[in-house]
Length: 342
Length: 263
Image 1 (tube, rainbow over the protein chains, first blue to last red):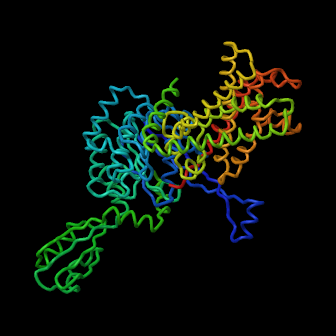
Image 2 (cartoon, rainbow over the protein chains, first blue to last red):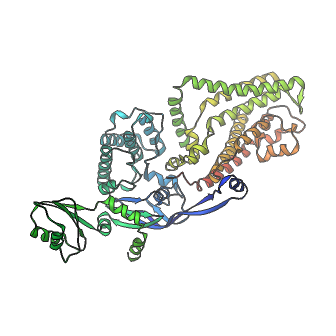
Image 3 (spheres, chains in turn red, orange):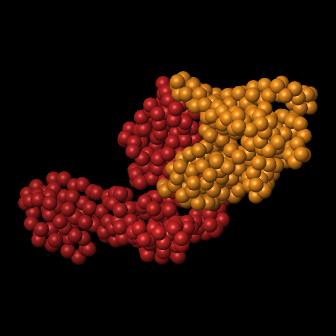
């Protein structure tokens, strides 16, 4: 069954145009001009139950707007969407019983009261029976190691502690879909890892569907089997993370450390005939760039056969670089072809 | 019923957070009462210069004021959302409200509940009882039932108008100064409406029916007057339902236009 089914989803905002200067402000007072800004442009995707899906894109690409439509906060301008069998904005109150939401930049908890009081209040709002609540809470508290935090007011928690409490708060009613909007923003590496492990485990044991937006691609690498990439309101990539890497990474780099000084001319001679590039790092080290169409073993074999080598390192292009490349080139062109062929 | 129990939960939380600041609590109570006291003194001063106001005696006008204080206190408890547009629309806290399974208006109201306003209601009831005795009005069980109905109706009228007023924030980016305007208009409803000219009277009765919060229902218990406002009194609960229904509809429609604060 599909957890999330989105078809031609669109969201437009009417934005007031502010004219410049005092005279402009006066003109605005009497006659306002508006323009339509399309934040999400007819996107479609489907997420089956039990999948962890990463939703990435630059700032302002439309990620948060999509999440807000999926969670029933915003009403779409056009298009169809179905989450958990509901149309979110239509049956909002019934629908939200089945989802959990964490906005990394905004607290879901009450600022002044103890964490446990917030949880109790949420229990009442979500109508969770006391026994279920206890069981669930104990389980979550144990897994996220919150034990001694429960009686502290939220305002006295550190960001990492608060974030873990936010996660618990969003899961108390046992939702089948969890939406996370930048859940690891501003957290240190230990807490990040803890949260990732926790999400992984929950997905595995309870089959919770997770959709998360993030700017930290390590989140994606650790968690997601699938990535949806957004640029300027359009989906420019939808598929596996590995595929994304192979499709957009241009190749690998091999670093050689030689026993003695090896001039570049000699190296070039060794790899003659295959399409690779050399860069010299210092007297005894050089880097060989191998594009995907050339096999690594062939390139290596040639070098190993012709030079005395101390050490070899292979560098995969990391996801950060790939994604930066896509953002920068605004590779919507490549992507459009992609969408057309798929 | 579910909302009643939710309301109770929020009240308990309020108690936990606010009652720890004891001084703050009493200062608010006292300033509330001082404000009401000023209004009362104003009435008393007016009556030092005249024996009756549009056919209403001093005790009657004070009686009306006492009645008004009861629904106003209840309203103040529930509708302490003076910073709604700033906090929920501009800062986007509405996001959080909308991801929870309860009606958005009630969540917003409960989060801001302010039970100390109820002290005003108690004082109002005291004033009303005092005037009741002084005027030697008959008292029956039915009066108590009617009083209860009128109070509910009056609270609903206030609630409906202020729900609609706050819902304007969903439609307009920068909410205007309409709240203070409304706040001033509502004060007119505490005095006998027949002292105003026809247009204002019509407005206070049917358009912004603040007369139904004070003078109209209160007149039900008083001696009949020549203009006989008390005939309208029985309409108070009906008006309450209509006004609140319209306010709620306006709110529900507005929520669909909510656009959130930037990501």
